[in-house]
Length: 256
Image (cartoon, rainbow, N blue to C red; front, top):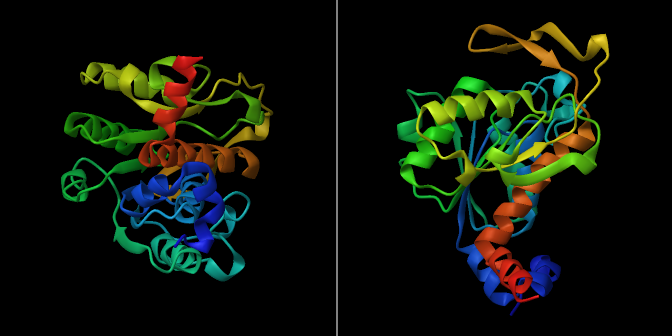
C-alpha cells in the first residue's frame, strides 16, 4: 500500500522510485539559508535516513532567509531544530545529527559513515574546498551550492558541472583551488547563478554578528527567495538521482 504522505510524489517518480528514496541515506552539511531548504524538500520526498551536520545556533539575523529560523528557535542548535522538523514531516525517517565544524581535521571522521549522497551547503571557502576535494577523492556522490548571496534574479540559477559556472566569486575561487588539488571540476555538480550583479554600496558589510571560529567575515546581502531556490534545486537534483527519475529523463531526451 502506498504511503499517503508520499502519494503525489509517487505518482511522478513511480513506486520503485519511492522505494529507492526510502532506502537512501543523504547527508546535508550546513543547515542555514540554502541547506535548510534543501533539507525541507529532502525530508518531504521520503528519504529514509538523514545525517544532518552543523555546529551553529540560530540568531535573529537568520530569520530573513532561513526556513528553520523562527523567534522560537533563536539560540537553539540548528541540528536540533532540523531534526524536530524532519520528524514532524516524516516520523519514520531515521535522523542522525552531528554537531561539527567541518574542516580538514574533522572531515575523515565525518565521511566514515555510509551515505548515498551528500549535499554541500557550506558557505565558508576553506572548509568547502576541503570537503569537496575529499568527497571527490573518495568517489562519494555529491552536489555543492555556490554563492547565493548578492543575487536577485532566479532565472539565472542553474544546476550544472562546476566548470560551467560564471559570474560567481565563490565558484571562481573554488574552481582555482580544486584544479590545483587535482579535482576534475567538470565532474563536480553544483548549483550556481550566472547573474552578473550591480550592487549597492550597502550590499557587503562587516558585522560583529557574523563570526565563525573566532574570525570576522564579510556579511553579504541576500534574498529569501534566491537562497530557497538554491536549496530546493540541490534537493531536486538529489531526489531525481536517487529515485532513478533523472536517468529516465536523460534516456527520454536521448530518444527524442
